Amino acid sequence: MVVKSQILTGGRMKAGGVRFADHPEECEALAREILALEINGHVPRGVLVAAKAAIAHEYYAGVIYDGVRKLPTFLFSDMGGIDIEEVAERHPEHIGRGHFSTILPHMDFRAKDAIAQAAVTGRDLTRLTAILSALARLFVRYDMTLAEINPLVKLEDGSFVAVDAHMAMENEARPRQRALLAELDPRLARASRPPCRGITRAARAYGGV
Image (cartoon, rainbow, N blue to C red; front, side, top):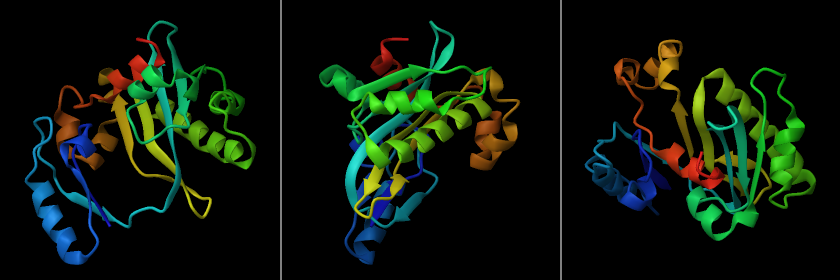
């Protein structure tokens, strides 16, 4: 099993907020430790316990806002599970990018092109295009500045699963999205600014926007 801290900040894995257990007793002990673990000034409101995924490959799929071009941007990498900033620094050839419009109807071929830049082909390219396109529509619908799945994994049976995700919303959009925020955590509907750090990493990976 995997035991994950339910906390609204990044860096859970590095801070010890994601642990693995082989039996129920170990799972319970780890959950108690994680519930007492403060990460980036935040205390978890719970833990998520799920079966450990049988992973064949890890990808990164994200959408960020390019403040220079004033357009959202696809980011995709075939090296998921690590910070996208690290991938951009050490393996830039493994990242695909591409802008899309928030006014014109969303065109899936732009998502497909970003994925193809990371040397993904065949059936995986088709299936990942649908996932990245859906992420882009979510980005626009909920006024996001960042929407990323890391890692987006391909399981040994060939299916794809979002193992972890990170979202950040435009501060000015919070009144429009109050119902969604309240559903996630009533405190979010009242807070003046979302507690998110992930956009910095993604922006640096894109090129410093």
